[in-house]
Length: 310
Image (cartoon, rainbow, N blue to C red; front, side, top):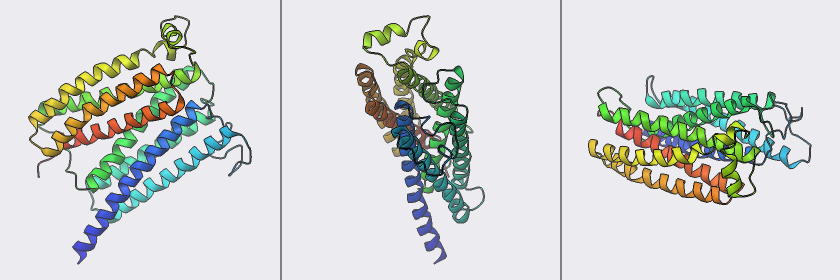
């Protein structure tokens, strides 16, 4: 009977863990809307209060947008804390679910602190300082790590095998390059998105010419790197996924290795349309959603390819 109850709890926890993943994706997408709409200073330079109020009374749209982001971010933090408590109650010491839940908690705390720093140091709105660029890069890296640990927690809670790094040879090398490459792609994407927000172009040609002007802002000068990295990385992913399928005789790995390059191709297509339409906010959000989906598939593929045979 105790085994049955434990199994039921594990299934409920796995479902809850995937809900936490989905909710955090929504928070990430709304955060992008906050940046793209220029609403990051909607609560002034106050944190955690908004204009020194628990619930702001200001009627400004930017205040409502920023406050909603803070509220949902707070809910996300509570969900991750609940996930950590649940993991400690259901799973024994040393279990991978406990590890994933613990790292998820660490990264969401860092995420909160970075968000607070952006507000308190006024690295939001129309700020063009180099400090904002560094903060955005830090934010992007931590967001990827947070999403990865949340996904792994849900994966392990759903019965996914442990990851083993010893004696993995070429598979481990390809996995590391793939994850680092996606990190670089995400960083270049964050810089490009910031440039599009701060320095919107009236035409595509004007935007392309600005990329190569010595007088342009550093984020604009780096903007061309994103599509170049995206195409080169996509070609590498095609090669790496074929190697994964070849070296791992596993149905899950084969399926994920098939899906990933196709998902990245869709991401490239959405990115191209986004560029051609001069990055409307709604399409920026769609592009980010596809990018997050690609990252999730990639994390699951790496976890499956590096599975420990037990």
